[in-house]
Image 1 (cartoon, rainbow, N blue to C red):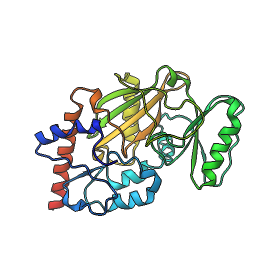
Image 2: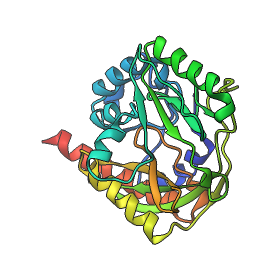
Image 3: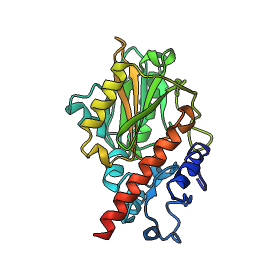
Image 4: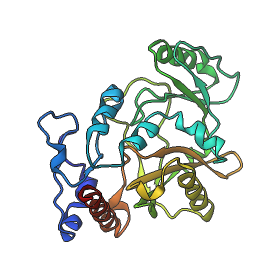
Length: 282
């Protein structure tokens, strides 16, 4: 995407208050001098999943990047969920199918099928018992193309309660939003860069705040080094919040959904710039 997302535009004026200018550039533009910036932020890179190896090579070559390249490498493959499960984080149960592998759909219940490397709901679908053959074909199509696959039960609470996405800036909780159900049926492709979402402000429960904190504490990085993070939670069958996804690469931050959020992001960026400049000067 060439240019800033309208939501990210909200942080431009607050950044100026910190003496910082924001310039939108494309990550794979060979003419960009990344060393000339005090800090580079990954934002609307909706195409990274199409060439992840090249994207990570680029990230590793940027002198000052937020979030840093090791975080992007870890988070852009959803198999990171395995580590969080091992760390005791309550997570949506997940089956994994490696490239070339096979999978037998359950006899009942709805499932969600998606690649472990994707964004925006691309190549993802929801399947009921009458669509078992379509679900198996979806898994086979991805696995035969050399793409790892994840299969999760469809938690029906998303149709009523929706997801709660908690946004953290500079390692601290900032605000939250409600996301409506994204997947309505089998994968039939997406017209555009991502599936459109239904978004509204939300005040998270104490239980959701606690789980989100556990998630960030379990990440194998210093959470203070995470300029931004979004923890997406969903109620399980008992109503308890469980982790659906942790977004550390290029999450929408929904700055327009919370008063003061653009200013909080600008303050976190200013602190990150100061730290990056200080490290460079040593």
